[in-house]
Structure formats: C-alpha cells, structure tokens
Image 1 (tube, protein in one colour):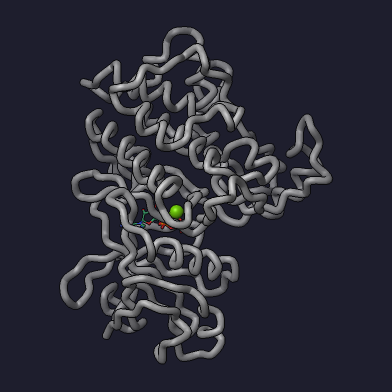
Image 2 (image 1 turned 90 degrees about the vertical axis):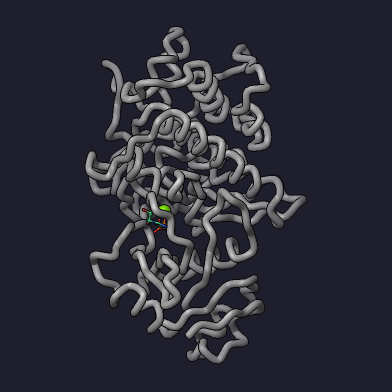
Length: 383
Ligand SMILES: Nc1ncnc2c1ncn2[C@@H]1O[C@H](COP(=O)(O)OP(=O)(O)O)[C@@H](O)[C@H]1O
Ligand SMILES: [Mg+2]
C-alpha cells in the first residue's frame, strides 16, 4: 500500500514510532509517495542480492519492480549510521522539491521503524562509473556524441541547482558514480546526500569537508570554505574523466612523473599536446569540440576559485558560440591526500572537521593535520 503526502512526515500514522515522528518533523516534501517496508521488500524479492545494482557510502541500492510494474531503484540506508540518517533527510528534503531532466527523480521513501529507504526512478544504464570506467564486462561503448551530451546535460543539471533551484543547492559530491544514465544515456545527477542549501544572500558557508578526494576543490578541502565553485571544480574533473575515459583517482597516473589526470592535462596543454588527453578508444570524434571541452575543464579546475566560471557560463562555454580566451587560464589546484598507512586512501569519501587554528600555510594536511583528517575518513568508496 502506498500513500501520497505533501506535508511533513510527523503527521502520518504510518510513522509509528514517536522518535521517528520527532526526527522527521519539519521535513516538508512535495509529491513524494510513502511506501510501506513490505511493499519495497516484495518489489526487491526480499532485497535479494541478485537485485543489487550499486553500493555507495551510505548503503546498498537495489533494483525493484513495484506492483504496477514500474521499475525503481531502492536505496536502503544502513540503519546503524547516525550520519546516514542525516544524509537521508537531507537528500529527501532536497530532491523532493526539484524537477529537471538532468536530475534523478525521487519517487518516494519509506520511514518505518529503523528503515530509511529512498525510492527513485530506475535508470537503465546505471552510473557513469560503470559505463565509462568500470570493468570491461560492465563498460559500455560511449561514442563522442554520447559523451558530449553527457557533459552538456550534467552542466545544465548543475547550473539548475546553482542558479535556479529555490533555495540554491551546492551538491558537494559531483563525481562519476553520482552521474546516472537512462536508457538513452541522458545523464541525471543523483545522490544528494551531502547537498547544502544556499539561501539567496549567502555566498559561502564554512562546513565540515565532505566529498570525494580527487574531486575536491583545494580551498574547500583545506579550509572547509564551500561555495558553488567547489562543484564547478568537481565538474571540471568529471569532464576530464569523460573526455579521457580515465579515472582521476590516484590509482591512475600518467607519464614518467606519475601525474594525476588533472596535472597531466595541464602539462599536455602547456606543451601544445592537449589532444593527447582524448580517449584513444574513441575512433571518430569531433576534435575541435573535445579540445574545447578539455579547456573548459581547465577553466573549471583553476586553483583560484574566483577565476573559475559559474555553471551558467560553463553551459555557454561548452556550446559552440563562445571563443575561449586561453590566455586567461591559470594553473589548476589540486588537493593531495597524504597517506598515513592506516587511512582509507585517495578513493575515500571523506567527512572531516578542519581545525582552522592548526592549519599551517604551507602544508595543512601533513603530519599532525593528517591525523585529525584520517580519523574522520568515514567511507571507502568503490570507483
Ligand atoms: N536510480 C538509479 N538507477 C540505477 N542505478 C542507481 C540508481 N541510483 C543509484 N544507482 C546505483 O547505485 C550506486 C550508489 O548510489 P548513490 O545514490 O550514489 O548512493 P550513495 O549515497 O551510497 O553513494 C550508483 O553509483 C549507481 O551505480
Ligand atoms: Mg554516491
């Protein structure tokens, strides 16, 4: 049985436990269906392992088929995680209100006993991680026109979040595994678990750092200063992954100096060899377009956040009409994770409370800083 509701959860009988009702009070939602746990259990054949389609930092995602035949993706949060519940409520509150062709649509949720479950539209082609960077069995042939459409679709979804959503939203975790692909490879931004809302008059917030190393803007990773430009940076890294078919993680390095993808791209650009960044698996592609996209990625990942374009500008820069003034390009910024041996490493999703007093100007994450930081790495993320 399912019910449609449009006010706060606290008003519903099906939220049986008082604590649940308390916890969810004030979470306003629009047009979201409330599912019973039983209905989701039957949709997934008791959460059968063969229905698993993904796993992220906060739980497992299952494919399910509702009684009316609708295919859905069911994201079940691990019950023990306190932080997970907060992420759940953030995600619910954030995405229940917004609609855009490049944002994954939330259909409903289940809040029953200890269960916290989100139900989304099901996207046939899973995530960009599996389609582009996954093992050879999972990889899909993504020709240039599909990749270009993924880049522009992502840009317009993100521009919507930054410039048009009410209130404005900074996603904070733009990366390949959070880009979902429908049957026509139209990209949809998913996983709003870390999203931050920015009321109109707010330009930045200081916050605990959360996100995924490799995609983290340096000023945000080091100082916890979050602006929309942190998403712009992550988007730039994602663009490079799409163009090159290579991962930005530390597991993939390039050249004799073992450079990361962004560093390698910058080197190629300076040596007039930028075309070498394009995926060699692409047989037939628009060189002018691929080069322009790579340059846009470099504009997005500049160390100085104020020099990065906003997402509305990025949408224009990706379209044909704009000449890019390369002479304005400055060096990219990169946040490097220093391994201590016991931490989860560069593929980690992180959540940390930077201690401003302790930060040194030269190397804020070395040595003692690292200890604080590595304790707060919370999740290993499959990439
Ligand atoms: N709507 C969906 N359709 C198809 N696959 C999905 C969907 N949502 C998530 N997935 C799969 O599950 C993975 C994890 O989902 P995500 O929402 O990012 O969870 P987490 O918050 O745990 O990172 C995705 O990378 C993708 O492979
Ligand atoms: Mg995710």
